[in-house]
Structure formats: C-alpha cells, structure tokens
Length: 254
Image (cartoon, rainbow, N blue to C red; front, top):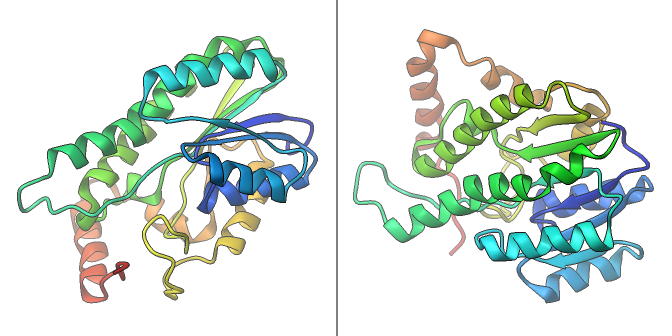
C-alpha cells in the first residue's frame, strides 16, 4: 500500500501494535482515525497526536460497528484504508474444560469483529480508486501456541478468510494485506521485556518498510521461518515450538 495520502480507520488503536501503527502512519501525513471502547484512552491518544481523530467502538457489538461505519461514511468519506487490529489474547487449556464465555468473547472479538467491520465498509472502500483492507493476524495463525489454543485458532481462521477475500476482490480497486506479528513486547499478554519478545519499535520499523510493498503478507524477519510451516511435517514443528515455550514459560501478569 502507499504510505502517504491515505485516510485510515484503525480498530484497537489505543494500545500496543494498533497505537504504534496509528502513530507511525499519522507521522507520515496520513489522516488517521482510531477506535476503541474507552473514551478516556481515545482522548489520550488523539491529544498526543494533533490531527488524529477517534470513534468510540465496541468491536463485539454489531450495532456499534454499524454506527462506526455510518460515522466514517458521513464524517470521513475519503477513508480508503481499514486496519482491523483489535484483538484479545487470554490463555486457555485445551486439555481441560474451556470457559465458554471466554471462548465466545475470543471468537467475537478476533474473528467476527474484523469480518463484520470489513463487511460494514466494503462497499464504501470499493468506491475508492486505491483502497486497502489490512488484518492483524499472528504468527500463531501458522504455528499454534498450545497455551492459547483458541486465540491461535481465531488467527488461523482470520488468515483463511483473508485468503478468500483477497481472491474475491482481485478484480477491484481494493487490496487485502495481512500483518502477521511475532511475539511483540506489548500489553496484549504482559509487557515484560522478555528477550524472546520483539521490541515494539523494531516491529513497527520493519512493518512499515514491508507495508510499502504490495505483498499480500506483511512479515518481519522473525516470523518468516515459522511462516514456512513444512506441510506434512507440521506436527513435529508445532511440538518443538510448544516444547520450547513449555521449557521457558511466557510470563503472566499478576
């Protein structure tokens, strides 16, 4: 995608990767509109970046999505980029009883949320001569993390949906790109400074360079070995990956 001259709507833009991407895109002269549930955080981010706008949005609520889309079409009709970034990452245990409320919340936020948000804006985006839909998935879409089985499954499903949507839109002005981050040191899990987590600044720098291309997948170097999931040998890869994490558990906030 082009990195300047856009009007960009970002879900989940008040923290972590979403906030950092909003800042980076804003600094390049794009008109950036962030969204999130909490008005105080929206106000904090926009106050820190004059010219940035905000729309309150609950990505789990279809009515809230419809209202946000209406606001965009009315107040920001030049919007040509949608970045579906909102997501949550609770731990679970696939070897035990799953909390159904947690599972439904994950599916609604991480999968139905971006599908619904895109659906609400897709016809608007088709009217633009140069439009892009971006999805933030995860390296876990390709190699699941056993301690976050449902989260990994939502990202795998989002990756699959992205592939289908890209094909369906191939003869339109709308491009579809997928950002698949590695473990980045943000508050999605716990900001810990763990050396295995990629510093947020490094991730944003590499991602912005990759976004300047028309590549369907936006991958930093750390992701590429795991993205090349070796087909029929994936069971060995997934087992080795998860054993390495089990041997050195991810820290959890207390």
